[in-house]
Length: 114
Image (cartoon, rainbow, N blue to C red; front, top):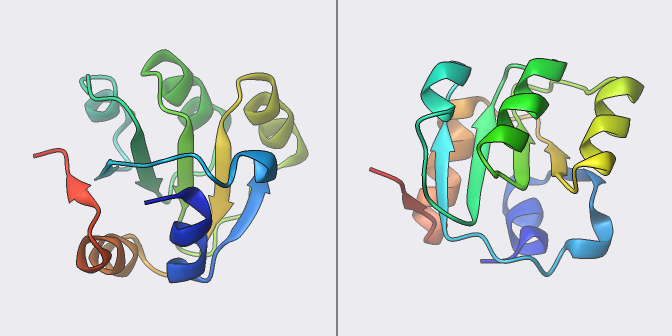
């Protein structure tokens, strides 16, 4: 599924990486615990989280995650936006809860990591 399709399903706004809306996502992982995110080894992972801070972006960078959905109507700061751009991380903002976001994407065919 592409980033553009995910944004459409979630009624999400793509904040950074609009030029890569064709990027394919195969699996998703939902967590606010960045220590859990650091254990991931899959490619083309979508991170779904409500933890909107610089640490989330730094964790994504270390875990080679290139797409994040910030759920629960969380908004990223200009500093976060700049860091996402520097690291080629696609960022979306979504009004839904983490649970609903995960459910909608699962129903649409995104696979869980485990």
